[in-house]
Length: 100
Image 1 (spheres, rainbow, N blue to C red):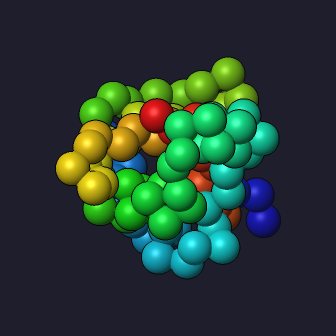
Image 2: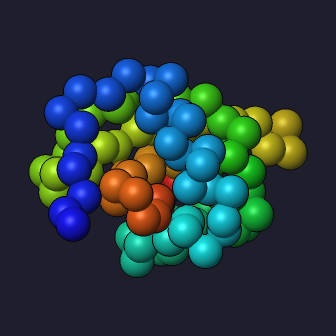
């Protein structure tokens, strides 16, 4: 059966789905560009996971060019704001596109 991606999504619905997927850290995937920025900016995997699990949606959700819902999440870690751009690969995983 094919996975149906919703045509409309509110921030609260997106956040609930993100939190559900983020409960399993194996479902949080940092793509190559995100890993490069993570290293450049000395951001740890734990900080990324905490931003996704406890942060709020600062921008979005909107459908990106790949047909995935995308949000910009923000949280404070070690006294500094951390931002993660996350695409929801529906019903399977979260793709961290970049972080700063």
